[in-house]
Length: 178
Image (cartoon, rainbow, N blue to C red):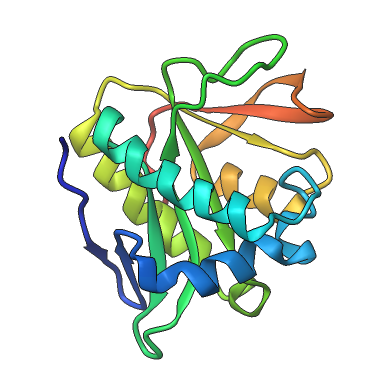
């Protein structure tokens, strides 16, 4: 079993999820504005609970996963970000054996640079712990803010593919984000 890290940035604490996060976590994944470009369907309490448990399992089995994002100043849960290996039924396949990078923030935390700050720290952690593992992400082609952030983080378009509708598969070249 791999230990789950805590990573601090100037404004954020990236830490393991706890059961105390669940109400805020469930509210985030039930929010239509959050899921608009991530499947488009709000999660039920049961689905959110399963998602949160999957995060812990990813750390246990893969040595990486998602971390809760907490705003330092308020101590409030504002989202999550990290890495997955989902073995997605995607055609053509493109995320197998990569650190599939993802993030989600509550609407009140969006547009403040938190996602960029968190992902830069997470990518730095991954480069130290998994230096030879490539990174990828999948983003809805209409999600302009996430496409801009991915480009800032060094991801470039690899292909368009089908995963529950069209998505853009991006891969990271391995260069450090600015």
